[in-house]
Image 1 (cartoon, helix red, strand yellow):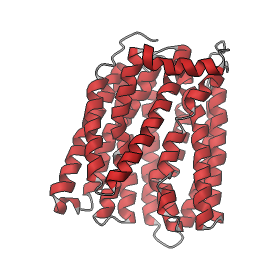
Image 2 (cartoon, helix red, strand yellow):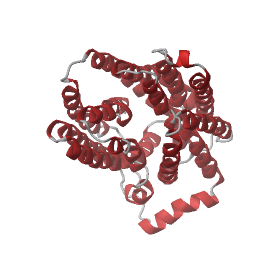
Image 3 (cartoon, one colour):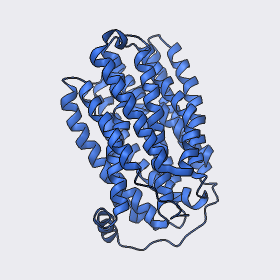
Length: 396
């Protein structure tokens, strides 16, 4: 499982829409309006369908087959991304890249649901956070080395070489699917619940399940830790950032993942709600500090290392939020109810991302510091609410 997850995480680094795809399409001359849609399509597209497909996933005795199929579909989408960048003109490439990202995100929705089920069936409580932590650490180290190599490429062929890299990244999902298929997953009796009833039951969770409501509230406010980090890249660009500094952000992200994920994973196994809370408070603190530098200290803001360092520290907190959340949802509930929690919460959060993104895009035109401040406040609130999510030993 660690090997399979490491492969998919490495692939994610190679096609990150916040960095790699944005830079690649910019170099190709694709319009900014199309580029701005990459992240919302990727994030919301992988979560919105989950409430509709959860009933279908629950009909599989072995959920690893769903994951493997989703991984192969992602491999085809990534191959399409690389081919688009190599073969098409700017306008056609922009449109088809969005199609490929939407395809990739939809396939990822199946992997997201099924992976939580397999993790809960195969790995005992107390070791689940380590699985994600170790794979994130390994992929963080490798991606840091890859980013250093990317910085060394400065000639006019950089965009074409990166396009070939995206095309080659599809192999990570093929290997990941093959490895995941070898996991010894215990089979369970499939659900035969009608899809329409399944969707109603998922929505009913918001009304009837107090624990689920607190989880949704926590996830909503902790979205600030996911949505704020690209603003640090934007602020760096406004203070004279270069492609080398962009490489610095990729390296910072890799270092944050490699240096902290294992420790966050261990804490998540002991108290996943504390990992979410501490990560959220850390992100809030760094966000406020970054706001202060951008607002009152232009000399510090112009320093070439300022924003990459802040990006690194911010992502240390985000790693805790992410690993804590993933471990919590596996530990807190059992069986198909785990699938219900994952699918329903992801669909609700996808809608929230679209709403927050629409609001932030309007105020960001005035200054990126405004949404940064708002997201930092959200992190602090989410960290406080996360403290109420202690489920003790309720689930195996």
